[in-house]
Each structure stands twice: as C-alpha cells, then as structure tokens.
Amino acid sequence: MFGHRCDSDAGERRFMRSPFDFDHGRHGGRHRHFGRWMRGRILDSGDLRFIILNLVADKPRHGYEIIKAIEDQLGGIYSPSPGVVYPNLTLLEEMGYINVTPVGNKKEYGITPEGSAYLKANKADADAAMARLSEASSAYGSGPAPEIIRAMQNLRMALTVRVGKGSLSADQVRSITAVLDRAASDIERI
Image (cartoon, rainbow, N blue to C red; front, side):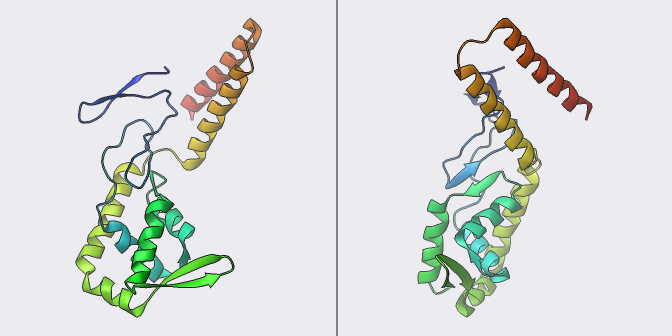
C-alpha cells in the first residue's frame, strides 16, 4: 500500500508515500485533497485581493482570521500562506482600500470607503473571484472532514513512533495488525 502510484487526471504519474500524503502546491498555499492529486491554482492571480476585500467588508478581521476564513470556505483543501496574504494586505493598505487598527499585539484589517468603492466599481471581477472560490469548494471541498484527516494523521504518527522504537515481536505485529484490521472493518460498516 505504501509507495503506490497515483495517476493524475492528465495522465501524469506521481508517487504517494502513503495514503495519508497530500499534495502541497507551490501557489501560495497548501492544496490537499484526499485520494487524488490537485493540479494548478485554486484561485487566479488577483482573486485573493478581491476575496480579502470581500471578507473585511463583512467584518474587520486579523490576518489569521482571513486565512482561516478562506480555508473554511474551501473545506480545508486550500489555505493561503501568510507569505501571500500579508503582502496582499500591505498592498491593499498602501492602495488605501483597507485600514489597519492595532488590537493588542495584532492588527485588525477593515475596508475603507475607497475599498468599498473599488469593490463596487469592479463588481464583475470581484463576483468572478468569489464564484471561483465557490466553484473550487464544490469541486474539491467534498473530501473527508478535517477531524478525519487529523485522526488519520494521528494514526500514522502513532505507527511511525512505535515502529521507530525498534523491532516488533511477532505478538506485537499481530496485535497492531488486529487493531488496524478491526478499525478498517468498523469504518467500512459505517
């Protein structure tokens, strides 16, 4: 099972180290989709600015809240990296479209009247960006719940740690195998 081949939609072959591995994209965020490889960008260039403006127009938010809101809207399959979000926030601030309010040791970002006017003047582009976000969520957001992914990663880590402690006796191998087989059987019955 480990080291199995995954054939992508485009016929390209890549290898996954385990069924718990995810494809991490190089487009300013992490792409995850259990069971298949994702190719390309989730969002087009410039979409992120419109999405950020829409989010802060709803309510002022911290940078981390913006990242989490996008990740949540996409069901966890994409999370824009801070290295992409914060430069966009700085650019939007320099353009006068958002303002920054210090709240404790964090910054809270809100839309300015100029930002609202910009969104209104570019409604078609802003709506298209939000539609792409919704489309990506529909296309890829049907993967397992984040709790399931976390539990799978916990299982993988527990196995890795246990195997890393040294050789297993025949009884230990049978016990671990029985636990895993029971879990698989129970999951299939759900």
